[in-house]
Length: 252
View 1: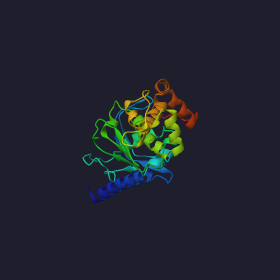
View 2: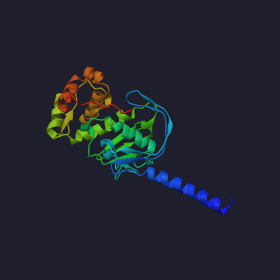
View 3: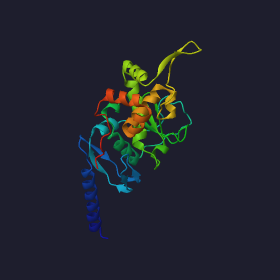
View 4: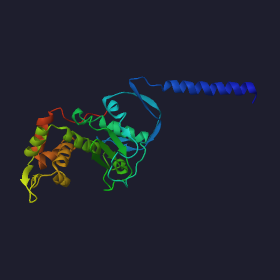
């Protein structure tokens, strides 16, 4: 190849590169989605999404993107008690799954008190898919298993934060409405004690916060079960959050 041809070929490559780079210069109201391979998965509404090589593209900054864009964190959360858990770097595909999930959430459960979403490999309580602590949520490998509903998993963790953000009078109102009561224990301290039965998930007996997260999760994803098992919780949630409190449809 002559020098002239090499120069021409180099200019063509440079022009293609510059053109492509300019095409991916997103505006201030947009978010850049990096090129990535997307594994096949099933959305929370049952829609099957095929595996695909997704090209880099710009997306409009929606409410969920604005909320999440600075909350994807790498590393271990500060003062994380489970020191044997290992951090992983978020993949672009995983980020898009989380963004898609949060896009369906009612506004009331998207809490500014959540400061970071961390990606760890395996919970000390495997196969637990996610955990909430103070101001962070950790997401484990198992959350992305094909048989898991990442939207429902994440909503449950968001609801832990939603409960903590409730005014104390509203938390007490929830506890009383759903059968939690104060009792004096043998150690001389007063504790909230749960109802004898009527839990949509057994771990709801552990605390009124877990009970709340389970019940509101079921209100959003399996309301028939909640209405049957814990009707008082169903009525409280409907009264507190209103008739419009439901999942949003996923934009195809």
